[in-house]
Length: 575
Image (cartoon, rainbow, N blue to C red; front, side, top):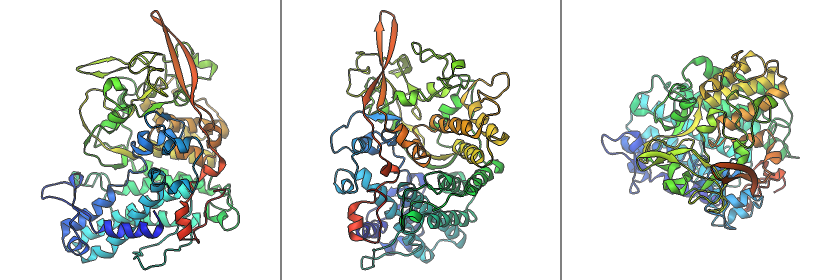
């Protein structure tokens, strides 16, 4: 979709909005395609519904049904696509390294294209809302709050563009009309970061906290959401990909990142995360009594909790179960967890499986592992709900219907994180877009890069690992070795993010911003072939499908059709 058509499309769709029946909550808003601009902003309910429409797309980048139902894990190294493997498959194009700027023009590759188009459509909707909301009969106080929500949402969609493409055009409050000039230059990366941060700071002043927000508004933006997005944006900005190490030359040097490195950016990121921590407004949901790491599992099935700073609201749903459960549990097994991801989970003592002190046994690989492994992955011998009881899932070679060799590209693993384990019914839950565990990890990473592995770094990681159910050990370090160097701690933090934030749309961006994607995404996606011999098993890893990554892919290409209509939009390096 061309820039002009993106804005024009938003012009038409934005006036459609959404409408709420009396008594309906924000979560129950229904689409209404008969509204027009005049009726929308002359009616308070319709005005609020218009803003609600902008909320409906906040999870589009996270959406587990993207990339032909494999979700973002299949374009990183967390999972492989199973059901849809044709040559026009977005996930296959991504994983095979076949993406090009021209590829994004093909009609079938809508997931790649809407990285660009979906964000711009919603930025246009926000600007339309801000230009019209003062005409509505809403009270002054409510208008102020809704404007702040809208400004956050605009910053949210800009942040999605920023992580895909780096600097993009900043259009401010302008509402583009079809006759306007859409040939816009890209702003610098620094300008985009500064704009997003300034918008978040301004919006936060007019928003409630998560404690003062009324329960019927749960899911709307709070101060915490603003602070959480600010933390993420500043962390990314301090990271190697953008902090003076980008691949741009000439004008692109300042568009694709900061031209020079500045270690103070890590301090800004640490301070932003610490502001949230010291507010004591959020906490990790912890329960190691039901079973080790149960709190880590349970929080993802809870609609309302004190760990989420921002979430995509959903009605009663089986989003994850329908997509990821094996066929024996009525799932479509759209993707399978990779051995690459499984190997990232350490032991119950908090040690990497490669650590000699971990005593990891390759022929008994699922014993004594990090509890987050058991709460994130269905493996051979796992129990899962079937009919009325929990029954064993068999993934060993040749086992029908879920085993390796029975279905194409199966790895021997299925995703269980964020899935409801105790029934086959719908769950009223939300998609986690920013949660407190990320903030703790943001703080640990930024502080380590700025000061080294000081006590604050250890403390943040220990909080994460304690909730996860890791054994504290005699020194209560939860497997963290004392007196690590900055480089050693960096590797610990990177793996901790990979495990704690798995399948939550972090790995795809973390590996890029750290500039390690070429090291990890150029390896085959692997599985585990388990052979049953009598009552025992043997274990052998195997390559499932190739996975490629080239350096130009650290940033996505702007669709070629957009460049052709707006030549001032300089293309990203090497596309």
